Each structure stands twice: as structure tokens, then as C-alpha cells.
Amino acid sequence: MKPRPWLSGAVASLLLVCLSLSANAATQVVTSIKPLELLVLAVADDDVEITNLVPSGSSPHTYTMKPSQRRALQSADRVFWVGPQLESFLARLLEGDELQSRTIALAPKEADDDGHNHEEAGHHDHGHDHGGTDPHVWLDPALALEMATQIKQSLAELPDADAAQLDKRLGGFREKLAVAESEIREKLQPLENISLFTYHDAFRRYAEHYDLEVAGVLTLNPEVSPGARHMAEVQEQLRNANNPCLLTEPQFQREWWRGITSGMDITLAEWDPLAGDIAPSANGYIEFQHRIADSVLHCLQD
Image (cartoon, rainbow, N blue to C red; front, side):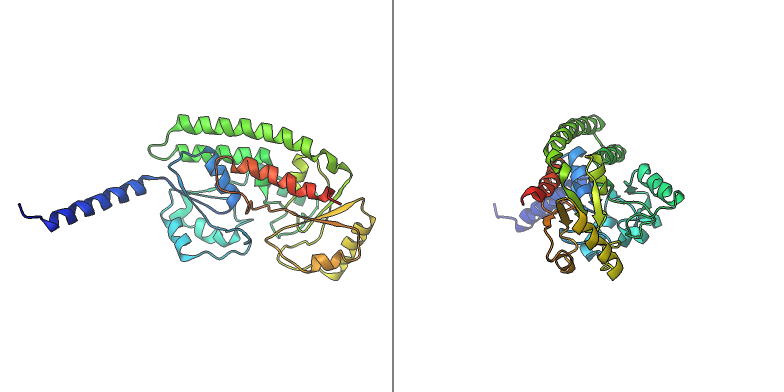
């Protein structure tokens, strides 16, 4: 019997179609920043495929998407972001008719209320031009648990979702997070006599959750170098501080923060609010919380 080349070609084509259909069956999720990717991984089924937009070392305030990332958004089953106060580059796209029904803004209501309370009291948050509220909600593990719950509920609404498995994974995440919080509180106790200063006001939610006090913020807007008056005020705060430590961030490399601390007895410690040094995994957010604590503990090195 003579070989039939067309038959082997047809079989190969059929296999490719099957593989393509199998790949397309996976739930497609897009996250705006790495910490949200970690929260999705904590609760989602293993077949979820995640595209994260803002890479390590970039700022969610000013990021420009690649064409491949725009295509990922168009084919996503769910898109998770914090909201327009943080990822302003996504606001017009995600709030449009095409993606709005598949998009979940994860900033908890508490964050919005906090902003309104600041405004009503006549106070102004430390910059960002975020309407008076701090959008770095994922740093507070209590708020992160709310966000993970919202992610779970949204994924459970998709066709063929395993609601029981999603509930189980969320419960496991809740238990691991409680253990991590207890360990971190104990780990951070030696920082009671350290005056913490931050580059911009991203650290406040983590600090407040773990009863740490932020003594000062160097810049009112992370995209703009501070004016001479504000720099002079910060320098005076640093001179009068008890064991000052400045927390810097890899997204905002600025030579002036070394200049502002020149000649002072001050420790520098780098932390990453966007979890750039955390490998994506189901335990990634737990590791992220510990990594921040370890970074801040560098303040005790000197």
C-alpha cells in the first residue's frame, strides 16, 4: 500500500487544532501589576494563564503597554487592576464598553472612604495626585485578603469554574496569611526605635498594619523631584530623627536622595512595593509580605 502524504498532513493539522483548542480552554487573566498576579495565583485553578502588564522596575503611574499586551487584554476572560488612581495608563481602555464587563477594579471601598475622609477633614495625602487616597492597597494584608476574595468570586462566575476548589484555595490562603502576619509582627519588633523615612508614600498601609510609624516622606509626587523648601524640611527631619532609615524603591531611581542625605548618619534600605523580586507562585504573596519585612530590617544593619 502506497503511503499517503496528505493523510499524515491531515492528522498533523488535526493535532494542531486539538492542541490549539486545549490551549484556548484555559482561563485567560490579565493583571496590571505583579502583586495582583500573586493574589490570582493564590486562589485560582492551576489552568489559569496570567499575563501581567507592568514589569519589574517600571512604574504603574507611567507605563506604556506593548502591542502583545493589548492583544492579551482583548482576549482576556478577566482583567484585574487596582483602579484609575494607580494605573492611569489603563483607565480609558478598561472603562470602555468592550472591556468594562470583564474588568474588576480591586481597590477596596475602604480606600475610597479613606480618601473622602482625608478631604473632608481638610487634609491632603502625601501626593501622587491620587485624589487624596493611597492606592497601594495590596500592601496591607487585610485588604489583600479582601482583594483575593473578590478575585475568587469573579473567577467563580466564569463557565466551568470549580467553585469548591476556589473556596478551598481561598481558605488556605487566609490561613497562611494569618500565620505570616504573626511571624512578621514578631520579626519587626526591633524596629520600634528606628525612624523610617520613605521615598514616596507607598509604605504607609504596610506600616500601619504592622504598627510601624513613618516619620517622613521625601517626595510629594514620585514622578517629580521635590522643591528646595520641601527638601530642606525633610533634611531637618532627618537630622532630628532617632536612628533614621530611608526606604528607597527600584521604580524611582533618583540620585538626589543620596545628595539629600550626604553627611548624615542615615541608613538606606531598598524595598519593592511591586514585588519585582518575587517569583510567581501560589505562595508568592506570602513571600512578598516577608520580603518587605526583611528589606526594612536592613535598617538595623548599622
